Amino acid sequence: MRLESPAVSAQPPASAPGIAPTTGTAPAPSGAAPVVQLRGLRKRYGEVTALGGVDLDIRAGEIFGLLGPNGAGKTTLISIVAGLARASEGTATVMGRDVVRDYRFTRRVVGLVPQEINFDPFFTVEEALHFQAGYFGLRLPDARVVEILGALDLLQKRHVNARALSGGMKRRLLIAKALVHQPKVLFLDEPTAGVDVELRRALWAYVRTLRARGTTVVLTTHYLEEAEALADRIGIIDHGRLLLVEEKAALLLRHGGRTLEEVYVELVGKKQEGV
Image (cartoon, rainbow, N blue to C red):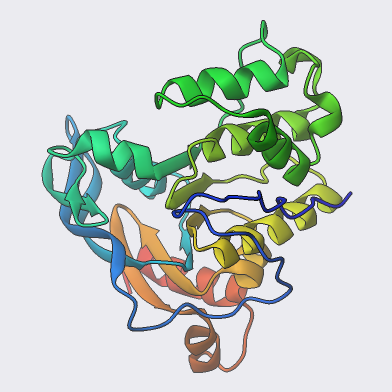
C-alpha cells in the first residue's frame, strides 16, 4: 500500500503551500522559533499528578517524538495543548497564543489524531470530513476532499459508511479528519497502534510529506523504531516529568550509536529505579 502525496491545487491557500514528497528526515533548523511552548505545566487529578512542571519548546516545522511508558503524561500534555483539558498550573501557547485565553485561535491551528479509534457509524467517509470541517466553520470543496482522501488512500471509500471500514482505514480516516482545516500543528497520539507493517510504513512516508509541507508534527508512539525513523528531536517523559529533550542524532551519537530503543530502556529504567 502506498499513500500518495496530496495533489497541489491550482490556487493553494497562502497558509498551505504545495506538498513535495520527501524520502529522508531532514532536521528542522535548530534556531527555529517554537510553535508550541510549555512553561511550568502541571496537571493534577485529585491526589494524582499527571504532569509535574513541564517546560518544553517545540519548533516550527519539526517532527518531535514524545516518548514514555503508559501513564507517563503524554496524552495529558497533548490534551492540554489541544484544548481538551486545562492545566492546574503553568501556561501553554501555540504560535504565541495562550491555549486558554485565545482558545478560538489555537484550536483552529491544532489538529489531533487521538489514540482511540472513534467514528460516527451513520456517516460515509466523505460526510465525516464535511462534518469535521463544519466544526471549524469551513466548507470543503470537492477538490480538497479528493486531495485528502487521495493522500490517505481512501478515495475509493469516499461513499462507504465508516462502520464498514477496516481498522487501518478507520485510523486513516481519523488522520483525514484532523487535516481538514490544514492545521499548523498536528498531534499524532499513537497513530499506528494496531496497524500492519505495510500501512505503518505508508503512514511514515505521509508524515514526512506533512513535515515537508511545513506542518509541525508531534508524535507519540510505543514503536520506538517509528520514532527513530521519523523524529528530528526526542523528548522522553516519565511520571509527568521530562527526562530529556535532545536532537535524535546527537542523542544516539552520545550513547555510542545504540538504537533509540536501547537508549530509551536505559533512561526510563534508571528513572524507575531511582538512579
